[in-house]
Amino acid sequence: MRKYGWNTFKDLIFRNPSVVEQDLHVDDGDENTERGNWANKKEYILSMIGYAVGLGNIWRFPYLAYKNGGGAFLIPYFTMLVLTGIPLFFLESALGQFCSQGPINLWRAVPILQGVGVAMVMVTLIVSIYYNVIIAYSLYYMFASMQFPLPWSSCSSNKPHTQTNKHKRTLLSLLMWLHRSTCLFFLSRVALQRSSGLDETGPVVWHLALCLLLSSIIVAAALIRGIKSSGKVVYFTATFPYVVIVILLIRGVTLEGARDGIEFYIGSQSNLTKLTEAEVWKDAATQTFYSLSVGWGGVMTLASYNNFHNNVFKDSFVVSLTNAGTSVFAGFAIFSILGHMAHIYKMPVGEVVKEGFGLAFIAYPDALSKLPISPLWSILFFFMLLTVGLDSQFAGIEVITTCLLDAFPKLFKSKHALLTLTTSSILYLLGLPCVTRAGIYWVTLIDQFVASWVLLFLALLEVAGVAYIYGGNRFIKDIEMMLGKKTFAFWLWWRACWFFISPCIIVVILVWSVITFVPPTYGEVPYPPWGLALGWLMIAFILLWIPAVAVYKLIKAKGNPWKRLKSLCSPSDKWHPYLDVHRGERYSEERCRHRKSHNNKQQINVNVISSSWL
Image (cartoon, rainbow, N blue to C red; front, side):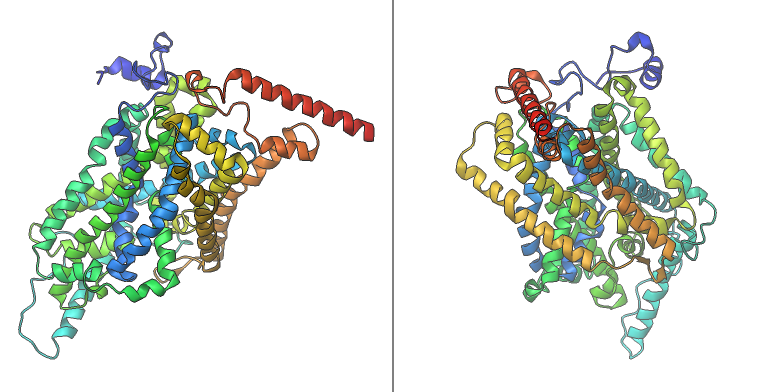
């Protein structure tokens, strides 16, 4: 890795004209000397795993498995992974790698759906705001863990006496309630300084604002050279969580009660009768879909920096199965320690289990405070949350900057570092309302409205657009240009998924999610009507890009309405592999010129016929 001094760093930020030709986000050995490529295959795989493995793998999946029958839940989970998760992940990866473009320019394949790409970027932009805040929470808790005793363990006590009496369970329940209340008090009143509701904004919480600033600086520094620098950072951030999970698991299984926790999670307490409940299959499909980050634009973006002939098929399996395995593996570490906490309080494991924020910032910190050397385990846990969050945030920022670079290459190519710093700064400023005393209400609002069924709708348009408008067979020929010729039998399964199975499953989940949608609350605190209206406006802001871009393109197109629609449902002249050497016969310049000339002749004929009728 090249060494850069202060002068070169200034050139990175301000681009001294004397060194414009030295593009520091492209290396000499890159296949694509304009956009750059991953330095090696490992950096791409680690970046993709880091992006796919998010906080939901740690604080969402274990709870869903416990809730939906334990080990029995793995049957619908892996079934949905095969039917929807891997096919959609493969589709997005192949699209990005084929054209070497981000999620907006990628829709040159189906110009009328280019608004879907814009909507994906808008989702990523909005979600990146609150995801940065969650990273700030993790930073704050990590710093707060650097003291003994832990600040949320003031009501903690030693292991209760073992003698039995009729009041023991009542006392233990009261003790757990007191300690859980202490953890909740620390989260609400100390960490968040939470107000009474969204109406009461209050001042910025300074320690969270500083943690948010630190998070933004870390992200900007990691992406200062785009994938060239983030590709080096993920060697640590994508692998360290596994080290922590192993350490927590080893520590957890040595504790009393760990077996009970694991049994409740995925052991003998598994309930196969749960498989007859439709809700279980819906939860499995939803978790698979969100866990792989399909529909956000990040998968396409990261794949767009691959070499053209990279084996994207094998990579899709590696990332998808690693992501699913991480979810299952993390659950053992979580439930072994929760089982120990249940043992201490002599209560069923089900009464100590939480999900989401409750697991990460209440239940698990509570459990960790019971362990010897509790600050060490707490620091490790929140540092793990930090690294998991950072990897996802890296990809989110990369989606935004890549789309800007692809849209305005002459303007931004020589200012990549400045673009990254500007994007990170804007996200920091937009995140400040989320670190006020009403911040947690904003975070929950964005999470419940934006990171919801909207992504299912975008994914449905994506798979339908590729399979039915662009043409599934044409898409398969594009993939074969990258991977080589495959047999008809090889593609039979993927055709079935892209044309029928995956779209049908997404439609069912989408309709179900919309019908069963419940206005969000934070605990028992309801949102004011204007807050809920703002949530629906965020959804409208995202989805309106789809018809708006389509209408704009229809207006700009030439010919009668049917001709305009037909032309926008066909690939544009700019849809082809990025480098000429990879265009082959199917996308040769001569063939593209011939197709354009043929379209122009048809347009003239249409105009003549229209004039004769008039």
